[in-house]
Length: 519
Image 1 (tube, one colour):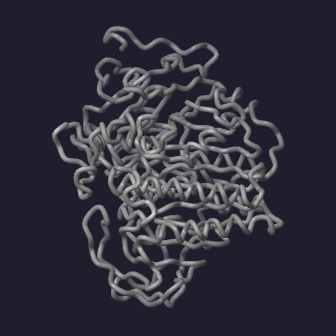
Image 2 (cartoon, helix red, strand yellow):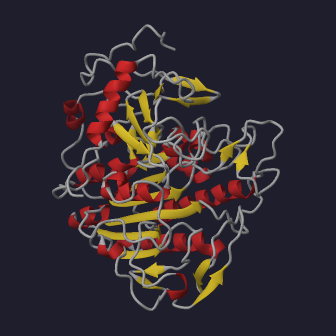
Image 3 (cartoon, rainbow, N blue to C red):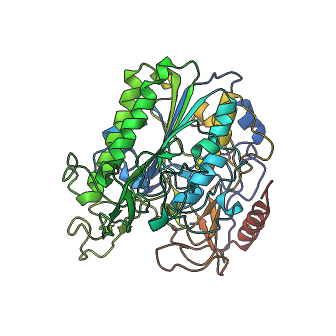
């Protein structure tokens, strides 16, 4: 570690010109190899992208609450077999420092689809439930809008969780009426979705804005692991079969691609392994790590089915596949060697490290501003297998997918669109290229901000901002400053060691938080 009296070494003169930033290093933490990114100027980044890439089919899969350590390519110590993720890593690029804009569901989805941080919207903390009003503004451009303008057929299958125009609520819910706001009103031409997480009513499938069944029964509330809240459930909605039904639909969309004149964009947000943890019979008991481990195996199988559908239809060489998660896992880590965990008792929402580290080496859990909340699996498989087996250690964000796809397809975003998105296209050409993203903002469930700038991370609050203790409060001091190149576990707060670094990062965060474009 740097001494308390010595500043961090300056960046190379070939970097971006910010002399306070040290050239990051690699580290090894309890068997986990984590690589740190190189730096580059904006001109160097821009020069890396070729002029003409064509318009491949795009399949964007986002798991729900899948942790960094849940997939074996990122966790060699994991006992959960994930052969589809292994295949994806072998055939694509593995990103080891990718981040969601939020540590929880709704705001990450907003950021992904709009290229705009959700805290710029009316949702400043937390998530919406199944009855939440539409969050994406009616005139806000989305990935669906962008790619539709680029000539794509656009479809979404899976968990929406961004508010719908429902008619009524609970006992007054009227499923005979079409939705007044749904994916079709924000750029997606085809959709089969559920309103929110699989633990939020109403439990209903909506196809193109219309419920697939208008008759409901009452779903009872249940405890973890099969956690659900009480509310209306459509007669054609079976909780345990939801993930398979959505995967069937996604496969159907993929199988229809060869007959289309236009390229296809499929956004496939899964419902798992988020609660309720309900693996199907095929996977029960297969992981040896309880229902959660079994559910992760089912998620992997759904990915496998999707990749196989792409192969079967003969479009692998023409398809860009992106796979990630919306935030970290909700499974806590128990450091007490004598404590019972999920393996001992399925009702316990935690693992001892010798059994499983759902969030890998990172501190915290879903909802936290610490790394476990927002550092997630991220894989990109390029058309034709370019850069297969590559690893990229540069900092990127899910919020950057918008700008990256815009640049790839040669489509200019409309005015005020995607103000917070930055293209990482040069890294798809060369995963080891020198690259530096502008400072990236992450956000916790309680509204706590963090700023990532190269190897430095500033937390604008005095705790996790989420579920792990101490939770702290946003903008309560002392703030937290971590040098992730030497302290990836965020154990040593350097706020008093490097006050000038913290001051400069705080000023940058304040500047970024200023309004961007339309409200």
